[in-house]
Image (tube, rainbow, N blue to C red; front, side, top):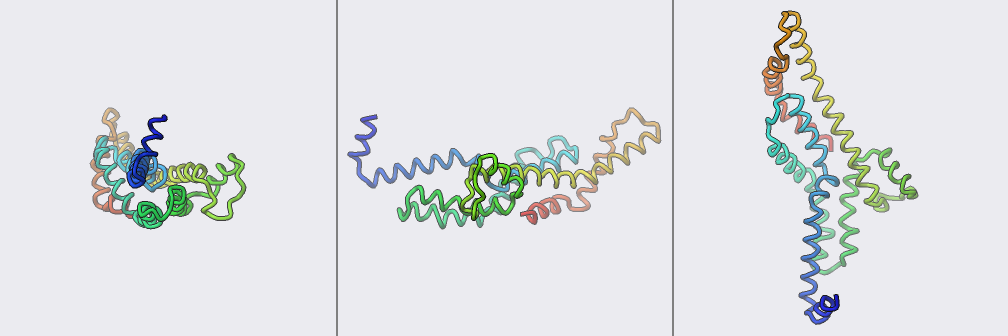
Length: 221
């Protein structure tokens, strides 16, 4: 520990500043997956795309890597204004040494809080605020991330499941119709999923399903 402190005391201040910036970048990169999943629209998008694949009953088509890739690029597209504000208000001034690390954290959290609060149900946020015994905040800036992030996460999951339910309905109707027809024909041993799959894919293609799903996701934010 003494050698570590001696290194910093004897080092050039500019080198120490660069070292701190490198540590900051490495810290952000290590937390990037959690930030991407819990503080952006990624959760809602990947859950809805998973529901689409499940409702089609196409097993692994599209592959998981394709769905994750689509979800990532849609996340970057939707979150671009938020990322731009974080870079403008926090990262750029920090790297220019106009603000310190604590000020950068406070400024970077504001755009994320504004995005999350716009997509968080009040009931979910009040749940965590009341459990932590935090007084009702006067503004979005006063809401701690420890309460905002989990409230936003469960709100996103509920919204994604609501969208997924609406996606399931037309495919469920096709499955019921095919099953009823097979039973009326006495074909009990033939799996209805095998017969309904081509019809579900045909319906999805005819209505331009991927366009409608992506459009609905974009309009939901």
